[in-house]
Amino acid sequence: MKKDITLSSFETEDGYTGTVELACECPICGTTLVPEVLSSVSLNETTESDDEYENKAFLINYCSKCDECFLSRHIYNSRKDIYSFHSSAPVKSNNQYFSENIQKLSPDFVSVYNDSLCAEKSGLLSICGMGYRKSLEFLIKDYALYLNPSEKERIIKSTLSSCINQFIKDERLRTLATASTWIGNDETHYVKKHPDYGIEDQKIFINAFVTFIDSELAYFQAKDLTSISRN
Image 1: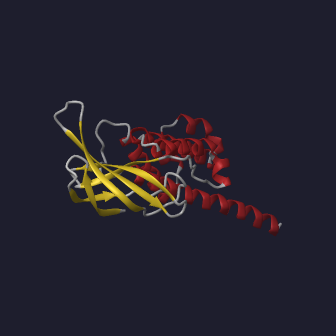
Image 2: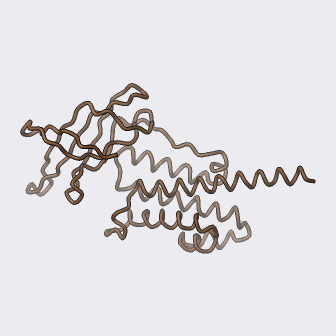
Image 3: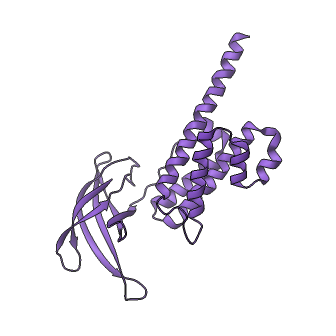
């Protein structure tokens, strides 16, 4: 969520209004929220070259769910004229829950995804996108193996894009997997091919993919049950 906030300049103590992308989750309890901003300050820091400045904003936020306050860091994006959310602290490890079916299907996906989530919450934004992309590869290949156990050799050796195109037949799943992969690949490249999409979009696509698979696995279980009943 974006909000216009009065920022106090650390250097001059003057106040001015800036658009800030707020934290969307409490790092302490993991609750999704629109935080109550208690205090805000902006700070210009010199870069290593000493002739450029990095404009940052720091907010003290209140979470009504856990009755705690946390600090969030925001970096000014001159192209969009907004202080983009960067990180928040203190970070308490809150793994994302995945259903038992997903945990059984791809335990490595669950592990790598939550490692990436921990990196993101710690502000390690330059590496968490790559981690999410790695988790997706485990999930897609494990799902492909589940549907095509006789193709194990081909699936294991195939590239992720080939695996998606050859073994993911549902167009919705194929689209979500491809979009997530493209964003993840951007996180490993010098120049992004899709600069308007980022880690939050990647996570949305991955979790939508998970939801579709979870529903399908539940359907297969229900189908087995009804088949037994008919017999």
